[in-house]
Amino acid sequence: MDKIKIIGGNPLFGKIYISGAKNAALPLVCASLLTDEAVTLKNVPQLSDISFLNKLLLFLGMNIDEKHENLDTYPSMTYTYRANAISNLIAPYDFVRKMRASYYVLGPLLARFKHAELSLPGGCAIGARPIDIHLSSLEQMGASIEIKNGYVIADAPQGLKGAHIIFSKASVGATCNILMAATLAEGVTKIENAAKEPEIANLIDLLNAMGAKIEGRDTSVLTVYGVNKLHGAQLSVIPDRIEAGSYAIAAAITHGKLELINANPDFLQQPLRVLEKMGVEIQEFENSIIVNAVGKNIIGDDIYTDYYPGFPTDLQAQFMALMTVADGASLVTESIWENRFMHVPELCRMGANINIHGHASAIVRGVKKLSGAPVMATDLRASFALILAGLAAEGETIVNRVYHLDRGYECLEEKLRAVGANIERIKESDY
Ligand code: EPZ
Image (cartoon, rainbow, N blue to C red):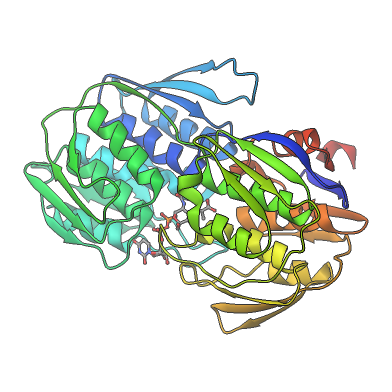
């Protein structure tokens, strides 16, 4: 497995182009299953999660055309999906095991083909990650759901029916899956306590462009008026708010100054306010953000992760890395995932002073310096937190298990090297 080597201490200066959002692209790609016409998605990031999902869709019988966008920025792609020859309605274990978001095929397949089978995703490093809300909502829409041999077997021989569904949690995945399913259901579906993440608005924009009738965008009550058929459409994936937030912290932790191009500051209001409270200067523009920490004293602050527009859990680990070198103490409370402090022992190996209390809280007491070390993380965002710590640390840090980063950060080393980081990938064949 590849590793990333960082020699810390360089302040980062320059521009970083923010890619399309992984977590927006995944449901958008699956929405193309809802029609036999062409769905074209622009600004799709080149990430292993996207290539896994494309492989699953090819397995189902999807036709996929790809085209480089010829941007002088990063290698995002335009994909055209055409689900006019779907021959398989099963998402097998080998795909779902590698990429949980494979569960996004369930709603579209069931709505359009009245049957779907999905290997039940297990837990992962950050929590148990059940999909009970997805399944019970489909049952409320008239589907029969059976769990057999590790698979969800879903049937709706008469088609799905509109229903009034109240989510027990504002789940991002369930909101996307049920929205997609409801577009082709008979009658009206109302989802209460829906998630409001920008990735959901992106999906609603695509579905409406395909002929769906969805009201309530950006609110927690979504109403879907079912239609008989959807048609082709074209849309751009929104900028990745978590990637932008991650690089904002890279500027802060190295006392540098970065301009994040193609970043939407509206998606990052909570994290940007926390950065300001920590002493970082932020300038917001329509499509970019300037983060300036040159000569700034970074001060500890508290965060509490919550559903959007609350503080994103997907930036918790990265902020914790910054807090390890801030003046004073910071309190981190994780309210979304029950096991999302796996980066803590690794940060402590680099000299951080962090105490975890129970499952949900950690106190970080800032230290003067971190020191480089070989480290390993068990999930994507935790891995980026270790990259950040390595950028700030004295000496050499080796981040192992780079495949986590390849799932969610397009051209990571290239982007960081271009703004002055001393970072390189060590290929497995080279050691
Ligand atoms: C999405 O996961 C993201 N993944 C996650 O990002 C992100 O952390 C999460 O939303 C929260 O923002 C993708 O978009 C692919 P949820 P998702 O359903 O949809 C509970 C990253 O690093 N729940 O909103 O799986 C669940 O256990 C990843 O990019 C149920 O109890 O998250 C959690 O506590 C990691 N039953 C809470 O809801 C269900 O049926 C929120 O989960 C579904 C969820």
